Length: 437
Image (cartoon, rainbow, N blue to C red; front, top):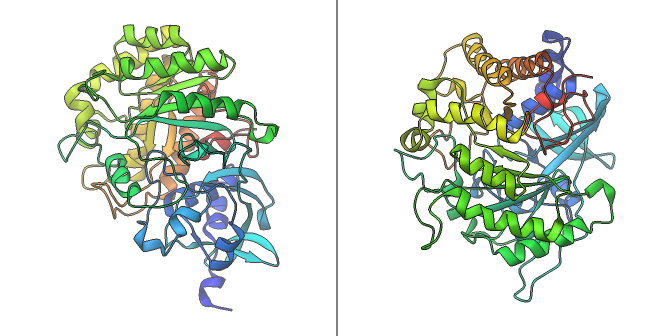
């Protein structure tokens, strides 16, 4: 047995440190911050699964070239963790690819197994394809290249594949949306089309096929719509996210009615535009704040600060609750960017205190932020940044959950259940949704 195999797994170590936190939360956060790699046997077992779509960001730590031939486009989009030495309940997690990760997916005794430093920590199930995958338009474009299904539940629509926040003085420092689009155009495979603007007719046709899914385990739970920020005219048309996206919303509602929620993710909008979204059939408007600390917001999200500003962004979030309701305003927070070097907090204690301050302020006012664990992507200003301490992620998850419970708030709308403990939530980008129970 190797020395590495004798090491105490991180999951076990941190479970002792945080006895009230489920193993599922600890492992999920560690996989999100450190990523995962696949052996050849694990990649062979992945044939035919629902693969990485690259629908917005890369969401990977390694570049396509670093992962080896075909790995980045043949690996699963997400995983279901279960069983193993800790008897894990079924927990969904995004598959973050990192060719240097201590976590390895392998096939052992016929079972897909996740190992940490050589020791098994969980079994895993790959996502299978829903019925509409593989259907094609006359030009050969696959339906899933227009809209992928994430976590067997979310129809993810990127209406505008680029972002007008451009260059070092405007792009969010953790974001690789523009870089990912350039890289996507170099790849082959069934990832999402690299067209800058989604075709409305094709989009609606695919959604119609998704709504007919016969398998309830792959039922479309919600429609997530997003894209890069828009601050000038797009091909001679709309010069703002509301006017650009409303025709899509109206076409979707005409085809599907109002049964399926629509989560609209754009940069901050004036309150009258939020009302227009609501009236058209949007059920949740999420203007992603990214980080609570004002100084860090100004540094890490310079485009957002330049065009809108921190104070206006926060004020509009609070105002929007009166329009969309509690749970209907859910800005994303990039969990861990509080410690981004060289600008962030030096200690976990300080960083968690800042995040907690934001949770308290927003949730007291009916805004329900949601967390996405920071993935340090290769095409960003912060590429190569050290992983966020696992202590921060666990403590931030606890702070989020305790504040959410304190104010008796509903889940953030459209993402499925949260707060029921492991085995309940659908969302795979944070362990905070797997607390409780």
